[in-house]
Image (cartoon, rainbow, N blue to C red):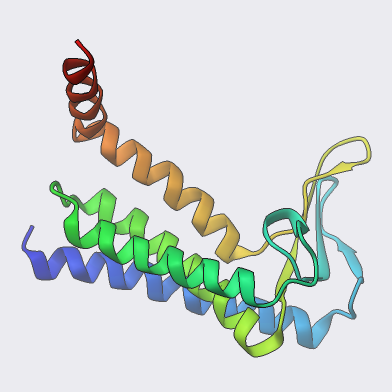
Length: 168
């Protein structure tokens, strides 16, 4: 596939996630009171949660550190996309998911001072996974797909063998 096609995959994945993330968060803010829980199934609730911290609500109340971290992550994603020796459709989609998810959450932090989370999964009994949003889900999916794309292209094997050769 041509370089323009690869770039298009990256941009479509990123833009799709940003739009989905922001539209769903807007719906939550307009339709659910803060803290409101709306059961959907036996294991899924919609909630309105404001995350002022990092992942899983760690370090609540931080403002500049999560913003700086998000900007650094976005730069790293762009550098990875630019310098990746084997640019496949899968690597471009995965990096687009990462970029879109991180951008969606950064938009929240810059505009609102917190990230809107609304998906609440009950895994068993009373254990709930920390609330998340579509941007978060895209980041997780992007990481998994990116690692898989590196495995498929043999990059992990080349790095492993190169590292072992230099130690021997």
